[in-house]
Length: 223
Image 1: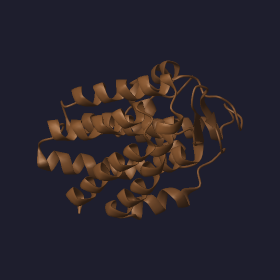
Image 2 (image 1 turned 120 degrees about the vertical axis):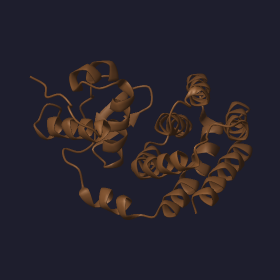
Image 3 (image 1 turned 90 degrees about the horizontal axis):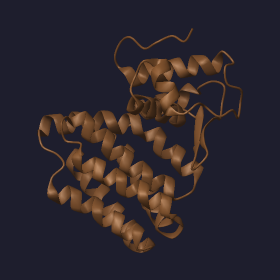
Image 4 (image 1 turned 30 degrees about the horizontal axis):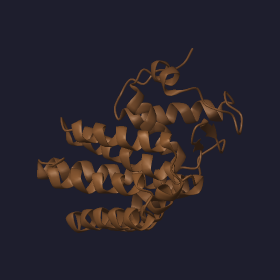
């Protein structure tokens, strides 16, 4: 019988349960995990929580996401040193790493994106615009949007680097937006829409410029 998540934080517990099942041999190295719709009821959480748990384990090197194929087991245990390194990192350091990764992935996404990638990015932008009920909801939608762009770059290593930074980034952004009390404004949406337009137009330089400008502004806000 599959153990269910009972206490918060749900994403952390869901990640722990998935890792326990991997360690226990339920999925071998290289095996494909069931989809979100299967895992969510098994863990007793929503699909967004499953996505966050998968992000965490991807960042820890346990899982890897292959665009169009699914999520696969990349390691049978978690190397804790990567997690500890990220948890100790200052938020500015994390944003600087994101600037390096996402400026390049935005450029690659503009050059390599498929129609399916572009649909996913546009859907994520619409979802981001509507996710304003709470700071945590907005941050999750924001990270989903940025990950959709990263995935469109077609580089699994860059996707893993993005996933590694996600838990630390999410924590800092939720705290910042909760204190600020406002998010998801017109200017913020337009900055993200500019990135989408550049990817849609297959303009690598414009995409890289839009990504760098947005993340640099975020760095200044969090400094």
